[in-house]
Image (cartoon, rainbow, N blue to C red; front, side, top):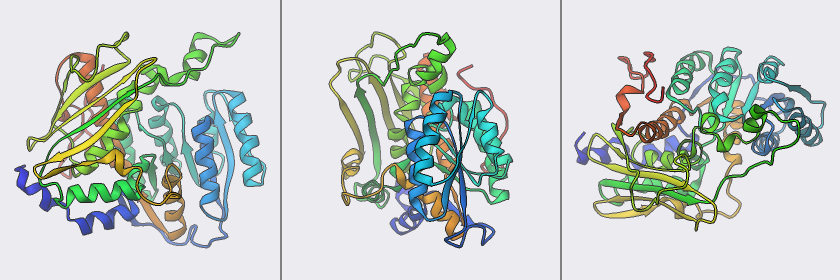
Amino acid sequence: MPRHTFRRRVSRRSFLQASAATAAVAAVPAGAFAAGHDRIRVGLVGCGGRGVAAALHAIAAAPGVEVVAVGDRAADHASLAADTLAEASGGRILRFTGDDSADQVIASGIDVVILATPPHLRPAHAVAAIRAGTHVFCETPAAVDAAGVRSLLAAGDEARVRGLSFVAGFQSRRHPGITAAVARVLDGSIGSPTHAIAVSELGLAWRRPRLPGWTDEEHEARNWIESPRLSGGPLVEHQVHAIDRVLWAFGDEPPVSATPLPGHAAFPAPAEPTVGMSVLYRFGDGRTMLAGIQRREGIVTRIEETVHGTGGSIDLRAAGFTGPADQPRDEACIAALIAGLRAGRRVDDLEAACRSTMVAVMGRDAVTAGRDVHWAALWPARPDGRSLQPLQSARV
């Protein structure tokens, strides 16, 4: 696509109208939760701190929202979450534990499920929820590999037919300061976008010390964030949010290729190859995005998220600190889902969430394989643009 056509594809007015509800919002069968006193029964799968916070935000989002079931592989997590949420929700909460706890929560008669499990579990749980007729709030990334993303895309067709909402935890897309900054990029305030930088240099993620009696499997599960197999690795688990913001500013068009840059100056070789990676994404019209992350002990924090154009640049990170002091952040996503249910609207983030997750997976796969990875090898295609032809993940 010629670069000069980019600015005409998305007008500021149409972008802001779409951003008000984020992604696609379509009408659903009316009346299910339209009355403010109608109960919206919420189930939580994944009872860590992020999951419990999302459940509390759901309770606070509107009257009549109740958390009625929680599930986690770890019994101590499920018990603590149930006690915390019962106090806030004012009712008895079912608690399920073990490997099938997600299935039990989904089958417990809930209307909405919050998926805050480790990322490798999210696609299967989301597909199960959609098949059960349950609205989904899914933390991000939505998956850890291309196969997981494609399974979610396939389930998205069923969600649309059944009028089910799918909201993802990309809170930036509901942040007023970042929304305004992205709108400026799209309306041509910095000219035609040419390149973007989305890099982070951070300390190590949290880690739970091993307790007596834990198996190797349980130790890995409780420290999933440092396991590439469970988290997708730092580029997918953490940097996907920065990648999502740049993609949004680029009009949500995916790159055509990802090239690993192991020797880039901004990312000195880490002690372990899984701790840091850097990749250059190329887009069909010549734009590029440099994305990368390095995590190690004692590092000086550096985060840069900038979109450059022929007439200037915009700092997306700085935009994240603008706006009212009480503006919604993490709670905005689950609140949007509850508001959509109350208004009889379907809120659909699924394809955008899958796209951003797949771009992060694409970069991780390029670094892992030591070669370019192409979008066409990962993303399914069919005549209507959403097809789900099974393709082999580059990571396998």
